[in-house]
Length: 126
Image (cartoon, rainbow, N blue to C red):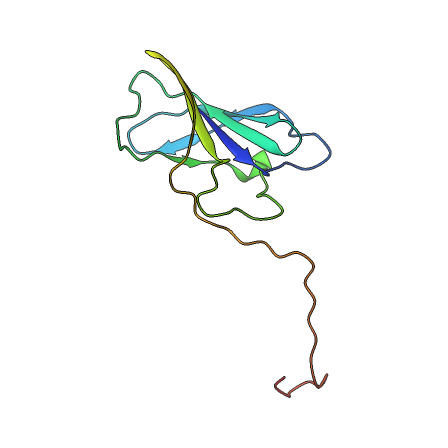
C-alpha cells in the first residue's frame, strides 16, 4: 500500500531521502515496516506492506510513524479533503490505481508571523 503526501518533506540534508523504518499498526493488521520515498520535488510517498490478512472493506487502519523518520508537514499546511492525497495498492488480485483519500483533515500553517503591542508596556492589556 502506498500513500502519496503532497508537500510533505524531510530535512534538506537528504539524510532521510529514501529509507526503510520500523512501523507499528494499531488494530488487527500487522505492518512491520514502512518506506519513505521522495517522488518529485514536492511530494513524498509512504509505502508499507500489509500481510495476507489484508484490510477489510471499511476497516480503519492506524499507523504510528516514529518521530525519527523526519516527516514534516507541508509548509503551506494541508487543505481539507485535498485530492492530492492518494492511496494505491499492489493487491493480490491485481493493482489498485491511485485514488484520492476521502477524508483529509486540514492543518493550518503560519507564514511570517509578527506581533505588535500598543502600548508597548508590561502589565497593560493591548
